Length: 593
Image 1 (cartoon, rainbow, N blue to C red):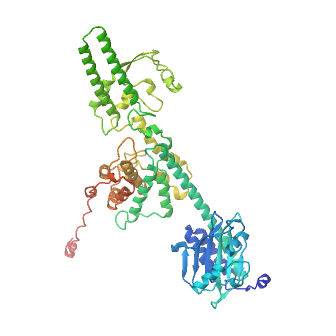
Image 2 (image 1 turned 90 degrees about the horizontal axis):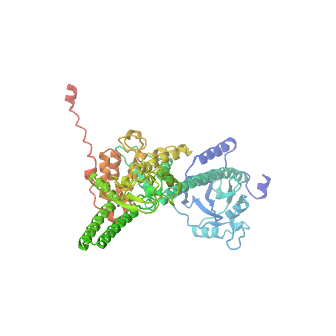
Image 3 (image 1 turned 30 degrees about the vertical axis):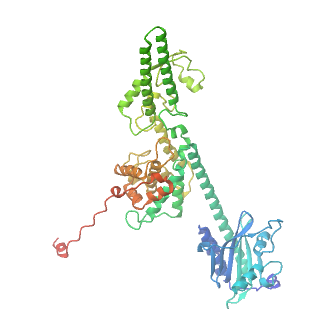
């Protein structure tokens, strides 16, 4: 009390006494700890402090990493100024620097900066009479607005590490009569207590935001790493989340029908965000040559080059036979005709084999038989094929005949092709019916979803992220229970998991960066999805929403190449509207019944 009197400060104020004041602080503290929105939290801190002190104005500054105090929220009731916070009105003033940019000296001229530097409250009864601080900006503001800035109270916000994270500044406290008065020592102590609670709340929120930012960055690093493994699938892990959230937004916007009750709160949106970004995390274990397999004989390189060289050997052998025959006195014209015919035959065979190496929608049995027929042709090998091999491949050849040279087929399934995990047999791979993957490789591709689920189940997700494995792990399931890996049926899957399934398929169909297929047009992709809807592979109601809401076109305009976006008539793909209910029978008929 004596200290307050010495500083010319009033001793008491209109703050509630005793238990009521303590209860108010407790209530404020509970409210601050419960608030999750950063803007609302800042606003609550300032408005509660202004309410307790009956202040006309105030500012909450937050410290930046550049040692400056940025304006987070500003209020001046009598001038009807409300900026920052939840108002959406930007604050035009630059941050207050704590240290001079040129000299590095502390900025004690500014009252808020000085409070932050000294970590001590500053209570000024009248700014116009204060010494040691530069209030020229304040006076200029007053001249322009007719305002009179008088009493100031600046309280530094200190976290648990005793670091200044912000400053709470209050202006023009008022007494019961509405007169501007100085901030009392008692009210200062109360605001210091509030500032301490506010600092804890802000610091906790900053820590939560930092942890969230760290988790987000790790998630995106993993997704980028998966995309970076393959130059052809780069962007898949980024586009699927966009389309998934786009479809979820369309569902949430529905006010009637099946999706009228579909709502996601802030934490559920984040849960979906995390799941979508991690939906292919298992692919981190999938070899690049399987993910990127563009042709049937491709491994780390395309073995079609070896096959072409064997055709070159066959052609050269034919030429040698011709020259030897002519040298022995046989008819040169006849021998040259034989050679020319053989070259034409080999050329056609090579073109056929090369074409078969390109995966397609379907390879007929006739083509497979033709591959096997051509494969029987022999070429002579002069050098030992057991030399220069890694020990794993050499071990596979231990039981092979020891011949250093001999005849070999044009195409063959050899012992060294049967590696531990994949069968690299040339005939086997060349006769793949659909696409470019054999059974082993397709199984490995499918295993990525099992590994995704296993990896995500190992992560200690907090309660509000517990469904991440379910959302991320369901994008290869089908509504009829024939999907992978758990053969879930529609009623066993959540809406977010079903949304991700459609997003994953549509992105894959329209992607223009796959080596094993050309990008499909919008109309082609929707037609395929429609067939999948009819076959109960994707959810029919979500497919209809995907079309009716225009989500397909929004995605196309954002991610597809212009030449892919062709005209589409979605009418044939939509489910017919539900028939209206039959009219109620007339009252007499009801009575008769």
